[in-house]
Length: 111
Image (tube, rainbow, N blue to C red; front, side, top):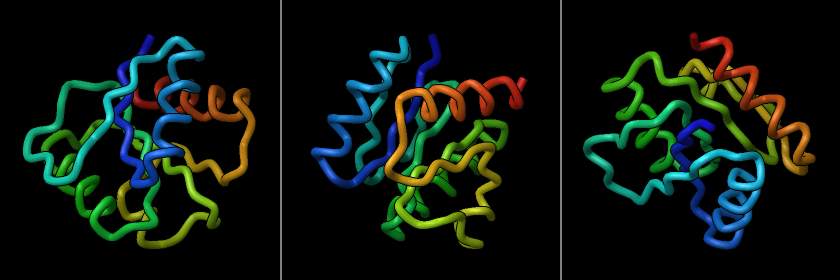
């Protein structure tokens, strides 16, 4: 089981992610805006559409540069997101199996 920081602005999608992550056996730690010290976690799952979410991720990566990031978006990978050094990128819509695969791959790559 991994602890996963979840940065998703839409409350409905955020609840869905929590359910999916728990179904996969992971612990979801929902990030609210203005996090100054990131909680201990194994991975960050980021929906990067809002600039505030990207900035939040940058701040967390400054404090924890080895933290793997998986971006989940309706858009294909963008240069502004790739500067975070994500180890995974998942385009919406996706299956539970695809989510599991990208998380497992990112966690394995960060070891």
